[in-house]
Length: 106
Image (cartoon, rainbow, N blue to C red; front, top):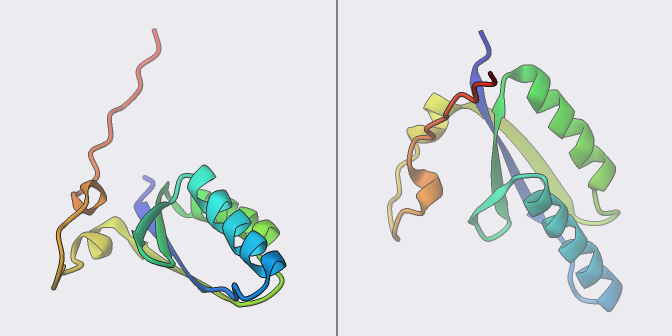
């Protein structure tokens, strides 16, 4: 049985020069294109179906890393992610526990 996991990617990238801004934008665009959503500024999350999926996406992140800055990755279970407490602000649609529909092919 695969366990639902969340990858959290947190980053602090330099944006002083045009090249640095371009690199930071490319990294953010990669994350969004790979199914991540913004939790808050410079924190993105993605749901994965088990450790194999986590490893696949980790390899993809490693290939997309910018050359400068700080990028961190944290993997937690869906249950742990859903235990996050929102202290200030409003919840987003991504804050709700994920409901997955099974695709049936006939």
